[in-house]
Structures are given as structure tokens and as C-alpha cells.
Amino acid sequence: ALPLALPGRWVFQGEEDLFGAMGEAQQALRRGDASALPSLLSRLDRGMAHLLKVEARLGAQIRQGERLREGLAQEATTLQGRLSVLGDADLAEEATTWRLKEVALQATLLATARLLPHTLVEVMA
Image 1 (cartoon, one colour):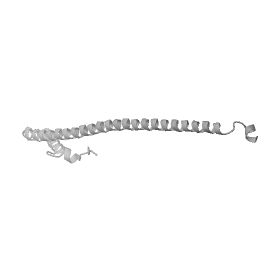
Image 2 (cartoon, helix red, strand yellow):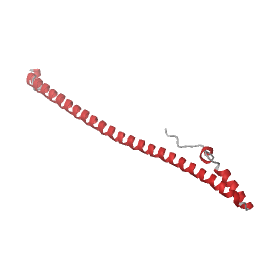
Image 3 (tube, one colour):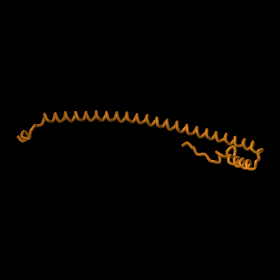
Image 4 (spheres, helix red, strand yellow):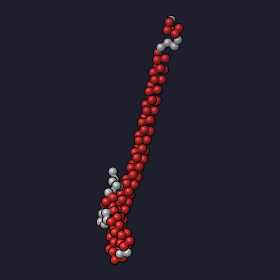
């Protein structure tokens, strides 16, 4: 199984606390403290870079899962084809065996008919 769930704390507060930085930026803007914004923007940039890494990691895992699914689908198709060939071979073998038994039965009936009397009158006579 491919784990695609990641803890929110790791995603949004991994290298930088994005929510904390956004909250501080909001407060700085309300206070009119422009001097705090460059450091907050730097923190937000680091947080966004971390989010992009997380997105790339999840994308790679999704692609790996898709490749795995495609491989399994191809394998299922291959196995289904092999099973069909085996089933067809068994059907042909059974048909041949059935025909041989039918011919043997007909030969036995023909031989028996030549040896035994043909009618009930002949048997009673």
C-alpha cells in the first residue's frame, strides 16, 4: 500500500509554520508594521518551498501507484489470456476424448449387433 496521507502539521508546519507566519503577517499589516514584512515573506517563501516538495513527493507516489496499477492490469490481461488458452486446450482435449469414446461405443454396438440375434423372434426360436 502506498501511504498518501501526510500529517497536516508536517505539511503546513514542517520547515516553517505557514499558518503562524500568515497570522503574524496579518497582524503586522493591521499594525502598519512594514519592517516586519520582509522576514515574514521570507518565512512564507520557505513554507511554500516546503509545500512544493510535499506536492512533488505526493505526485511521485501517485505516479508510482498508477504505474503499479497499469502493471497489474497488464498482468491480469496476460494471465486471462493464458487461462483462456488453457481452457481452450482442455475443451479440445475433452472433445477429442469424447469422440474417441463415442467411436469405441459405436464399434462395440456394431460388434454386439453382429454377434447377437437381431429380433426378439430370433431370440425366442
